Structures are given as structure tokens and as C-alpha cells.
Length: 394
Image: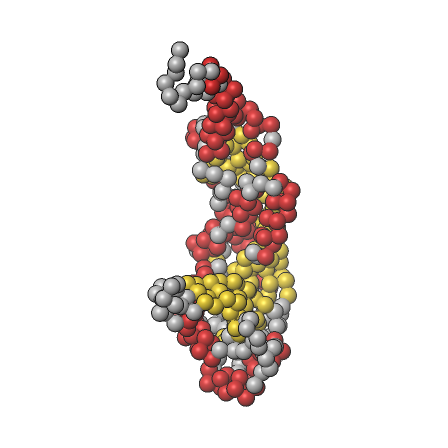
């Protein structure tokens, strides 16, 4: 018997998948279904499993006055945490679990608060420090196998444990005045029946429903508890409450913008001017611009660039509170073949303490092939200001 062309006459190669192949395909489909299923998250602050501690505070509703604060998010530890856990699991499934502790929703909670308001002139700085120290994705334990075998009816279970802390610093005295640390326990259930579990889950203010491992519940619960505790402490401690003041907005001074590579590193007056203009349009106060330009011209800084000590000295002369240092790490002039591109490292230094308040790496591309580098820097600066303002850094 001759088989039609393209079809083997051997039974084992008849074109129909074998039972083993079918089983493999089903296993893959089930695992994909479990991974793509919805997740039910439950977050608990250790020591307050039922969430009743804030309700027991008699001062919760008595303190009505809103207080000014500056908020700083600790992003520096996030990359090192990701590297450590990726080295352990060699699996990017842990990244969303880590991101939950550094969620942008923390800033959103501060922005929505009727009790705390973000003010760049505030004396009290609140630094948010997070650290997950125990991560277990759902596909790293026995429950994942059970979920696959039951087609997702038995949920796959994952977890994370860590903490979120809020460090209060009196910037006028450069001293930490209080610290609030909240150990976090996070469990999530991934499976086809997770939406059903949500309808009967207790403590719904601590429960979140999402399509993946990401949740905002950790950030929302930590900030909510911190706000309640801070209210009570400010009412009980007048000395602490008196530190929450707001002064004049800080005055900024833009140092020469350095262009790295290609021999000597020299400042670009045009790029510095573009950065200054963007800061002004962004609503920031600049120190004496004309006097600053004269001092920079007189200084004739060396090819190695302006040093921090020289910048601080200049800032003191013109009564600047903060210095903006920027270096262009990559610059691609526009051409007929491609648009321009600029990558920069921008950092802000406090004149009084010489501390780096924030540091950002940003890049921007041109919109047209003939757009100038200055125009790209101008737009990059405005985007940077918007990002920093959302984070409460300016």
C-alpha cells in the first residue's frame, strides 16, 4: 500500500502525536494555565494579623492638621537585591516579588494622603527603605506540581517575607529622629479558582487580586500603618511635632555639564543653559544665575572637571542650597540616517551637608533628524523634573 506523498507508511511516524507527546503537550498547557491564572494576594504586618492595632488608637481621628514632608525612595538596594536572588534561583520569577517592596504605589499613597503632604521645603525627610529577605515563587515548591495535576483547582502557593521601614530625618539638624519598621508577610495563591476565593476572603483590606505576582497591598498597608502610628506619636510628642516645618523652597545652582569621552572633559555652556531653562520652567528656584556664570568663568576649572569642593564653595557664595551636577555619558548628534540621542547622569548635592540627595541616569532621543542636542537636553530635563517631583525629591 502506497501512502499519499508526505505521509510516512510507518505507524510510529503516521503524523499522529504519540501518547507521550500528547501528555507532554497537556502538561505544558496546564503549567501555562497555572502561570497565567489570576493571583490572590494576602499581606500581613507581623504582630497585627487582624489589622486592629490602628483601630485601638484613640488619637487616630483627633489629629487633623496636615504636616509637610519630603519623601525619598531607596532604589539603590533594589538592584543588589535582584542580583542576589537571581543568582540563587536563576529565574526572573522573583523580580515581581522584589518589586512589590519598591512599588511606586507607596508614593501614590503619600500623594493621596490628607494628613501628609509632599513639600520640597519641608524640614522632615522620610526615607522609605525596603528589603525582601525570603522569596519563594509558586513554581519552586510542591504545591506547583499539585496545581498542575489538578488543572489549577488546587492553587499554587508562593510567598515573600521582608520589611518596609520609614526613616525620619530632621534635615536642619542632620539627625535621624524616628524610625518605623514593619515586618511584612506576603502569601499569594495562583490558580483558576483564585477569583472565587476573593469573594470569601476575610480581611479584604489586606487582600489584593491581580493577574500576576505583582501586588500593591504591601505598599498600601505599610504606608497606612505608618501614617496611623505617626499621627499618634505627633499628638503625644510635641517636640517631634514641632520639627515638621516648611521653609522657603531650596535654591538650585546648575554646575557645568560635562561631556565624557573624546579626550579632556569640558563643560558645555549651551547644555548648562538648556538645563537651567528647563529647571525654571519646571518651577524650581535658581540661585543668582548671572553671578554664577561669572564665578564659573573666573574659575577656569581644569580638564578634569569641576570638583565637589569647588562647587560647594561657589554654592555658598551665591547662597544656593542645592547643586545640580550633570555629565553626558553618551551623545549622538542627529543626522539624516538617525535621530539624536543623549544619555546623562544627573545628581543633586546639598551644599550645607555635601550629601548627594538623589542621583538619576536618564536618556532621551530626538524627535526629528535635525533636532539640536540642546533641545533634547531641554526635554530630558523636564522629564527628569517630573519624575523627581512624583517621587517627592523636589
